[in-house]
Length: 97
Image (cartoon, rainbow, N blue to C red):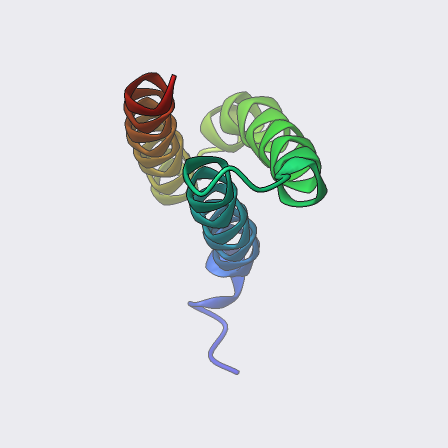
């Protein structure tokens, strides 16, 4: 593996977890819209989002202080994108209820 790409691997893992949470969130909204129980997908989604976003918030200052500005920028972009996803989920929830 190229040593130049090695430092950004943690952000790939974080992005992967956010994609998994997005999939669970999408399924949960669909289940709620069809009046089916969604707790089996919604609870893991919330847990994954909390842990992943918490890890991002924890790592951003460490990346910045360590001079890893690329990782800081990627982490901030992931936080912003997660915020957009949560906003869209909130809109879908309000349409349902």
